[in-house]
Image (cartoon, rainbow, N blue to C red; front, side, top):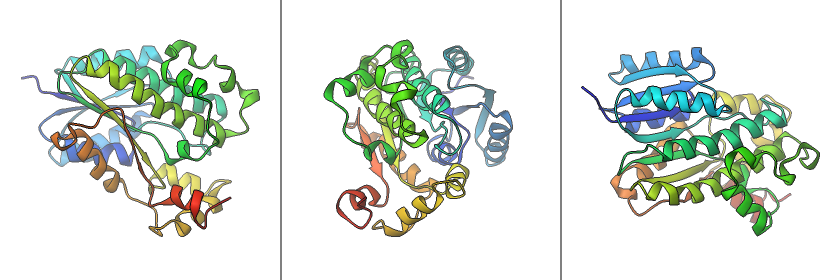
Length: 275
């Protein structure tokens, strides 16, 4: 018996929290480049009564993305997408960040948009970082939104000589995520489906712990100490927002990015985190 399929990319704490919140009764097909990560999450979820299948996949490869989608389709129609995959500024060089977080996300949204079921929904995890960089020109924003995926990394302002460091690359990738969600939401609407993004602040996950222990650790610790919430967030709090966006309560929401960072961005512009 075929079920509706929830496609989950990235075997992390945020992906798992959303899958647990929204995936009951569905076939959850989960992929990650590190097969041991997805095996561990699938074990936890299957033992909790969910129905999870896994496959190794690489978000930086269109071929791998298409293969993963075809595998998922063998179980039924894809009705939900959760994209929680990505690498952080302390985990990878500029080229990898651009290939995974920017190009890979754009390809995933495009390819899932070709097959998403009528009434389907998607959420991709962006970041507060996209909100904390100098404004791009309208032409640059439009290029991030609409450039064919295979030409994205050829844009002049995405060349390594024009990128200051890995944090700047990450900010550009997350800005692209938000613009791409706006663009792809129009394509998805042609199939009667919705697409949104969530831009979390510091959420306690293994990726965040890498950041805390990395070269910008003090910066991040100071950020959550001086934001209005006075703490980092949790994966379940991200799932709260995803539940709104992916349920009927969010039926009028598409093409949007929800910033949820404990007020850190507000503090960055107008409070004690001002640079």
